[in-house]
Structures are given as structure tokens and as C-alpha cells.
Amino acid sequence: MSDQPYPLWSADPVPHLLASRERATGAWIFPALPAGSPLAEGHEAVAIAGTGTLYSYTVIHPAPKTGQPPYALGYVDFVGPVRIFGRLQGAARPVIGARYAPRHDAELGYVFEAVTA
Image (cartoon, rainbow, N blue to C red):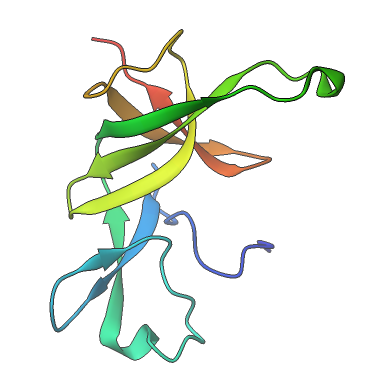
């Protein structure tokens, strides 16, 4: 059983992040709405397939006392359209327009991993 209050990943053999698409307008939102939401009836769950394009990012420099190295957070645009914020991995320094794929992460739920050509 998941401790997430909303569905994050599809149950497909190759899981995809889930968003909700409003039936009336076609607008996508992430994360997907939980079944108990008052808005759920007007939305359907949709899988976010493929890779996304990095729209914007920032590099976080944790306090030295934490012992954590710097890490990048960014917005990644996917077909839908839907823009998702999350941790970026796999690139020494992110580049706007680079391709990223969502990956499961035990601690954060998901991260975006740089896709190499």
C-alpha cells in the first residue's frame, strides 16, 4: 500500500507518472487527483508518457553542516501539456531544453533523469 494521498505511478508493466485531465477543457494537472477528491468526477487519470524538456531550473546549495552536495530542481514540460517540478539527476549542470525522463525514487517518489543522446 502506498503512503501517497494520490496516485503517482501507473500500474503498467513500464510505469508512468499519472496526471489528471479535465474532461470539459482537456487541461492536465499533476499529480493526479485522488479518487476521493470532489473534483475527481470531472477528471480522468492519464499517463505521462515519454520524455520531457527542461523549462527552467535552479541549483540548491545545502548548508555545509548537512553534508549534502548541491542538487538541481527544475520544471520539465511533457506532452499533455503538463509542467512538473522535481529533482534533476544525471547531468553535471542542467541545460535548458535538455531531455529528461521521470524515474521512480524511493525517497522523493520521482526524479527526472537526464536522457543522453
